[in-house]
Amino acid sequence: MMRYSRLDALSVALLVGAAVAGVALLPSLPDRMAVRFGTGGAPNEYMAAPLAVALVPVVGLLALGAVRGVLPPGRDVPAPAWFGVALAAFLTYVHGLVIAWNLGIKLNVTLFVLPGVAVIVGLAFLSGRE
Image 1 (spheres, rainbow, N blue to C red):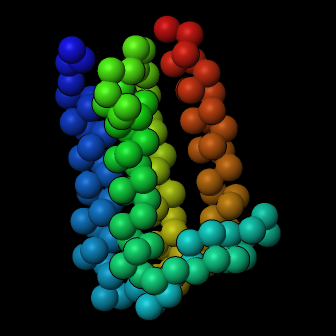
Image 2: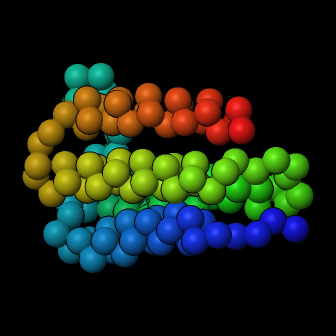
């Protein structure tokens, strides 16, 4: 049976915190939020704000469960707990960028996300070598 650590709790707390922040900011967000951005940084997909606010935290919790061996049950070799923290932190960061853009801080979300993608891919590679 897998033991859960403080790092697992931190991973969950990051994603729950992202959800709580999104819900708290919901009244200030547009009814339809930009959620996907092209290579030039312009939004190219929108969805209803409540769904957009919930999407990344929910997908993040499911991904966390998958990499830590909870989903599917009995997975042989879960990723290390530190990778769960890195994944949760990255998804929380992306969630924050999307919310910031929709609050009027017009930054190039794609440009800000790409370095994080590189880090997560590198960490995924390293986690498989332990």
